[in-house]
Image (cartoon, helix red, strand yellow):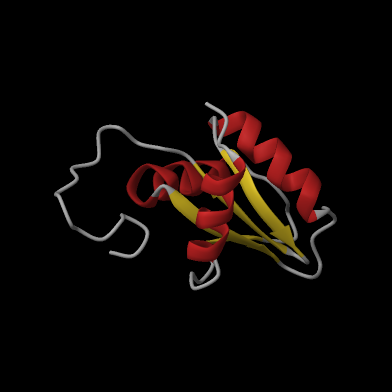
Length: 103
């Protein structure tokens, strides 16, 4: 599923207020990082990820790699932080309720 420009822009606005839920350390993209991000995407849908300064990765490359591996979409990359989105149709949604990333 590819997001439209206005949807991506709305998610960028939502992501601005989020704190990183997943941190990638100097070991790079490990199975534990991938599993943690998969869990975060499943429960929150919109997740901000941060790379430590000592990581030998570029944020754009890491975002693309993880998005492909997890079936997510890259919403934005700023410096050493990036945001991924993956819709979860199994999440319970109530009319007028906050989106899962705000809860």
